[in-house]
Image (cartoon, rainbow, N blue to C red; front, top):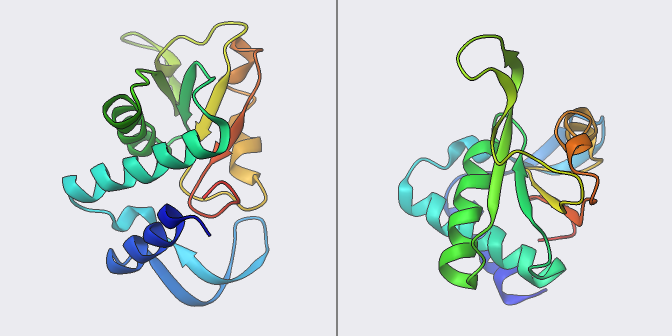
Length: 162
């Protein structure tokens, strides 16, 4: 296990984000632990979390992507802090966007906030927990049709990327 992966697990434990026991995931799988990123509560925790996510992205897929996407709701702060960490620690100033659960019909309207996705863009999904990809499958039909460049991979606290 890479150094940052072990550090990340320790960080989640110290932050009270990972709980051990018997749990069932959204996809119906049994798991011996549960990750609740809603328990990150401070700016320093989010800054460190963004660094872990940025390191995982660079380690796993490099910097050959165009946009980060954070599914509502927990993916929103994750995508922002990850974009900041990529810029600060990896020299990758990347665009990001996130979705609303329901499109607005007033103001600026629409379902996406941030970068307007374009055909050919390579999108990395930044999610809090990914096991079977259920939440990604629920979200992907909304944003990435505008970006037919592909999905280099999801990044989350509970998948092979970290």
